[in-house]
Image (cartoon, rainbow, N blue to C red; front, side, top):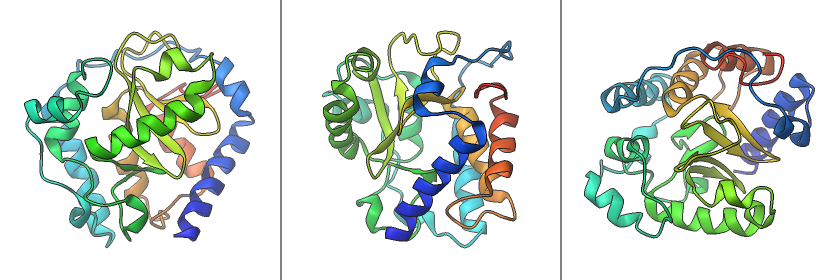
Length: 233
């Protein structure tokens, strides 16, 4: 498992180097080019993309299906997440309506269901991750207002993917972006749907090794689904 942690860290550092940006630099930048018109969120479309991602992993020999919990009804998702300070948006209800996260600690799994570096967490694990998030990045006065209403649906080794569940100012043109909290607080995907589409193409690529891709290939796929998400992209 140390290999995975080191690979993830190296992959993130390589992407940052390729972009020529520090965490601080990325935080100051916004998406500069005009954004495409995004379709309204559709739960069935998200479920189809998540299924495609699951099957992409399985086709490569990674038995991620063994790590996934059964779907959770909407009322059960809300009940399990009643600790969260704001109502959950439809995107999160749909995510856990597809699968309920992973049964055990992601670090114990040979083949976790990942969104790039971060593994899909259960609502119970999300509560633990939220507490950790707020005790680390959340102590920064500049980050606390944003992170307080961001739900950590994926995590690994002190890093998180979070979804804002209230109005956010990090990139106000995107109503529900996916934000990475790892060596900075940065928008990484337009939506949870473009995140899934990006991950599908990563996993399907012949050079995907189960953990990472060469940085230039990864970035090209990233920007194909989220154009302009990084400065200069």
